[in-house]
Length: 348
Image 1 (spheres, rainbow, N blue to C red):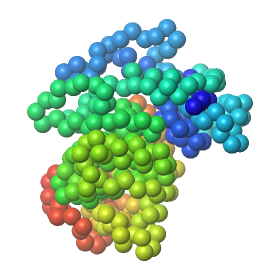
Image 2 (image 1 turned 135 degrees about the vertical axis):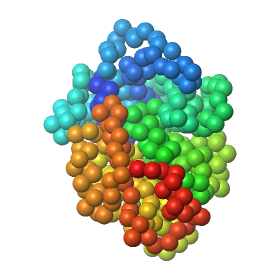
Image 3 (image 1 turned 90 degrees about the vertical axis):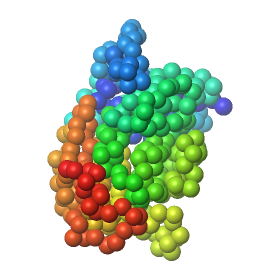
């Protein structure tokens, strides 16, 4: 099969927003090469040593390659390139992100050429005190107490290496209590859902509106031996939970103890009322994928819904917001973890 490859040169800080937009535009997969991949890393934490930047890649820059079916209905190479250029031109004004070089080129490639090529940029990464994300094709020796997430993203989005995912994983490490029931909204490759289970969650519901993502997430759940604890379903945000009779047959039902979402700010705001209704009192809502310029207004929107902001953390221009539903709103529990245990395990 032939694919249309778009090569987009932008800044590292804008890469996540570009990747998200490409997914909404219908990209079947992406490969990202960033300058940060070549910076010196902590070898004792299982990360890779410094490598020389390629001659065509500048410090602070990312090259994103997005793949679309060659003969997809209604989208020609010229139209896609024009759409991407328009998006990159609007990006600084609409998000405050530097679009960098903002150049776009297109070519036709064989499926075999791209399906494997991106793997050379994905190495084991220690993302927090205990969590390491490891591609399935890499060998790795873990340390005592280290939690290793085996991952093959395939054509889905999410390798665990981007700042937004790392922020979410770090927050989850502080908040997830053994026995929790957790929902991962916009699961992509399933990395957050798998992490929740490996951190002790009794049951995890992984949701995504993209069937490519749900297939990838389900495969990664199996890779990590988590069938029966992590359940992958297709849903637009939390609509499946609020969808009537089918909601009663879900393997994870509200009220739950935690919801995590690595989504852009606009989707986080849209999700917030649904998340508030689905959480037990004292439950946590971790929202990553928020650019720093929109962090305050996103936090304010969450507080208007009723959430209490517990913590915010920034990395490379992105912010993760950790919020709680007040205990006074407690509606019962669907897992054995107690509120006292939660407070001890996740001080704010």
